[in-house]
Amino acid sequence: MLVFGWYFFGQKKYVTGETAPHFEVQLESGETLNLSKLKGKYFLLDYWGSWCVPCRTDNLKLVKVYDEYHGQQFDNAIDFEIVSIAIEADKSKWKKAIEADQMNWKYHYSDLNMMNSEMAKIYRVQQVPTKYLINEKGIIVGVDQSVEEIAAFLYKRVVKN
Image (cartoon, rainbow, N blue to C red):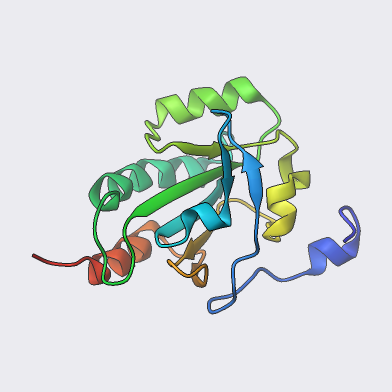
């Protein structure tokens, strides 16, 4: 795949119903994360940047969604996770934004290559914010939904006791 050519930037994002592409990254914590590790859970791939005002606004809302739905039992999934993929060039700004926005989930990744990031290429990300909501089977169930739409999707699927 060409990285800088029209081919990469001309590709459309993945759409609802498609199988999420496999990935494997080493997180800031040193832990290796891949798609297989997230099977059985709903998870959100959230592409964002510390420099992106709409992303930072979404981060504050996502903290509430994570706090509400992480650890929940769903009709067909055992949990909800967020995987934050930062489109960044400056590690200190990225880390400060995570702390300032209180992004308390454990999956944070950036290779500090902005749009040339391997994760940006795999998921055809051309802008931030970009969000992919993925189900327990690794199928994309939402693309670029608002945080409110993501919360509504999860709410409908929580097992009510």
